[in-house]
Image 1 (tube, rainbow, N blue to C red):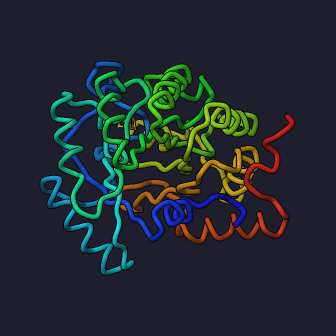
Image 2 (cartoon, rainbow, N blue to C red; image 1 turned 120 degrees about the vertical axis):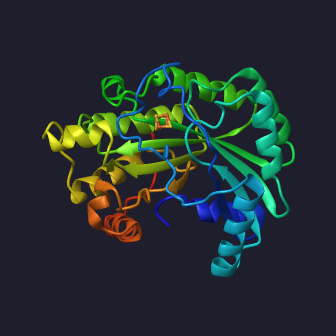
Length: 300
Ligand code: SF4
């Protein structure tokens, strides 16, 4: 394989297939309620980054998803995945209770999505404790290393907070997954390369790559309707993802090379092409050209 696939990594680590079980909590985000910003990131919809249609308490969400995945993929091991909004933006006791509730039978790990500027010491200490028995990953949105693009996205943090969060997580030996958006209208190829290099030096463990999607009702959608931004072409997306992968160290695990945003309520989503077709095309181009992850990462 021309890049290090997450599913292969999980199979090596746990000796069998492992699937993530999404959990959706009734939360918000400090970038929405005025704590660090108002309105949220310009691309973030009402669901706060989660597209799964699940309800109920943590245990019932897990059981429901587990049954579905067990039947479909014959999996026996799972990672509970706190997916929407900012999952460390709740009182510490609620956080501990939620994480503990998610550690049901067959769960071997827990992934927590959050912002880089929202990782207090108590949360890190607790995660360090859980990490002794479970595979803990903190998923941090970076999106891009370009300061100006981060401002335009209204992220409410810059690269500095991301670096700070990675240093703190590394000290606790907690796995880090960085989310990046390839093909932001303001980013050039150098930004794509620089983002890969930053992730290399921070020794991030995993990366999730997304294309920019435009959900109706967001600030980004308004900008799109007014003609203030242009999306890149699918061919350019594939080219930029390959550029990114070639500059990314080959030991970094790639959880996704394209996101799976829903086409409902979206003005623009993955060029109306299925994510697996885009992934297969990227792999084919890389194989045809003898490219592989990290082949341009050294000696720059
Ligand atoms: S940090 Fe995440 S949850 Fe908060 S506004 Fe941005 S994308 Fe949405």
